[in-house]
Image 1 (cartoon, rainbow, N blue to C red):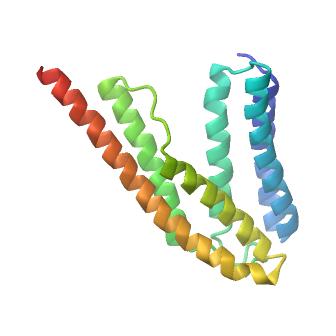
Image 2: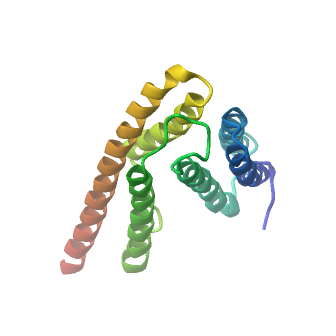
Length: 190
């Protein structure tokens, strides 16, 4: 197991998650926002360091997406609990359930494709990348709404945009998985 600079940055990002939770529990949306942005910067830096210093690793390939999902999942859950943070905008529980259900769906699809077809790479699509970007924007705007009153409307709009993109992205993954299976069935028949 190799702990290089990118892996250390990824572990640092994971270590920020409890501090983010504590900031929200202590009713400090500004501090929580700062920690969320800091965690995002470590994500950018670990990818940059991996490429610039040629320090990619198998450990990093697993840790990085896990750290990203843990951070986003934690943020969505924490910002769904009414009265937890002093943000006037609370993410509706159905949106958080939708976001988590999509992630579980993707995990199950990837696992099934790996077990059934030996597919080891299930790359994210453009709609998935846009969805992730909007989820990050959503968290930032909801946290900002606790600091700047005028951000509430923008946060609410982005919440519903995330819901729509999450549905679209989930359907896209189902469609892609179906084509992979259909292609595999055709190959087996020939």
